[in-house]
Length: 291
Image (tube, rainbow, N blue to C red; front, side):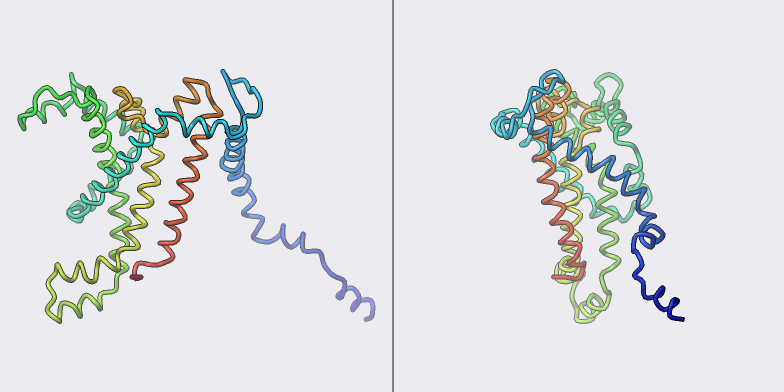
């Protein structure tokens, strides 16, 4: 009995229990995450601090890459183009949601198409020889406008593509938010004689505001990193009218072979996205009913 009691009192190691428990099921996902996310992120941060030329590592550069990026006029222009692109895309997507409830099935379809396919499809639509954009504009009296041939029309064409593709995402987020709104305050307002317009602005919109902000932040994060559609459609042209932040970073790395400077751009982009992601997480925790 004494021997058995001593054996029971002997402390057991936690490692066998840890590897035999449910935590071991997370190991494959953790390894995959480290391989595709953590390692490239760490490598990119290190590369942003080094100087490269034609693929050769020329040594430690410190913060020179960041200083050169912030002093680059083309980089500032790309930032401005990206900002205009993000603002127009977010505003137009939100505005289109007003009538989206009539098209709940059809409006989801664009989101299921691969971005590269979307770019190829809209390039054919905008083509000056076989596309349908120029003939449609001609019906409204607009003649001689080749969408991808002028800077202003190419930029608006890229924005229209993005609005068409990502309206479903905003629609689904706001629809989910509307379904979580309690009906009792709305019914009480109607019984008190409030008009549908007053019910919307005084009750629905305040309760939907956190969800709306989350949708805007998520759409902003996605629009900042847009690459596939714009690269396939215009490759940043004509000129630099549609050269977004991501396209300029790509050109810097693979055309100008300045990988260190390109990595510095990407790290700055990552910092901005992390700030926006933190805002989105904060708004999600507020809940749809928080004023």
